[in-house]
Image 1 (cartoon, rainbow, N blue to C red):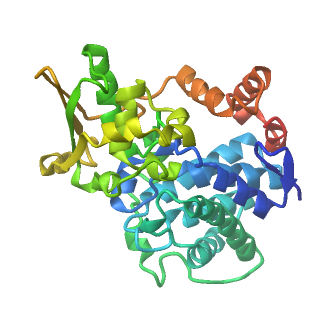
Image 2 (cartoon, helix red, strand yellow):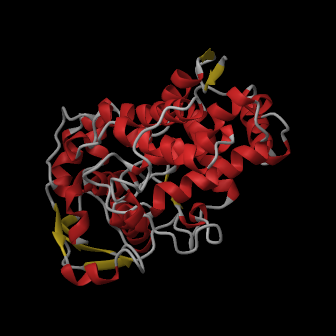
Length: 376
């Protein structure tokens, strides 16, 4: 079959279209995520593989919009309810196999085979790939391998059954399965950076509304962070750093928030990164681990405290427990659409953007999701 490569104006096989769509899905790093799953070793960003896989496989099979939505919901449950996967094949591999199996109508044993085969063949994502292009390619391969595994299982290929010989059954959180849907528990990022930086970004932007905080009058900034989140201050970036590295560097991000009053794609262009002034400001920003915050993460919130000292001797402090975009503080429909228009603006006319929005909000009404994909 011929499946849509979203945004490219071209088509490919179901396997490679799914690969491309999933690989593209997080290049902006402004997607969704699941706080508890990330902390416990499940998928930190389930949507990046679940949605592209379901849409592409649904197009291949001429599935209905309702069936695609149901598959996405199932995929989110698999991706986020698996635990302890950080040193193993990522849970996205099991998620995509589950989605493809559901759309193919596989039985229980076939689905278990598909998920086991997918996990066996999926690439492992190493922490050292954070901020590198290879990380995105892994998303693509998770989508491709999951579909391949489901197709193999449909044709009778066996493999490691999920839960039989790899102890995954003990790693799957089954409480509430089929009743509490994890797709309802994801956050959606308002800023294109690692989620661990968002509490600081929001605190700085709020403080700038309350006081005169500029690069010229900042003496020192201290950001108190979860011990779990100190990786966002591990590596120093400079004027020649890669933009993905900057998206994971809190001092740089906080400096941009202070200097520019926002954090958007504009803060990660080569020109902005090459500006020595923003790096000089970042030198005044230190990130410290506060073990006192650890006890309430991830069950309750993701706390961050920012303290800004200005050259006139004043100190301003702001704590953010639930960064904007959390399930309890969701983006509005208009804010979501604003994100879509901003990121797709160079490629889509306002008329086409509105047409996609209208189609998306009635996805469940499509008898064949191929019609929806044709709009993208």
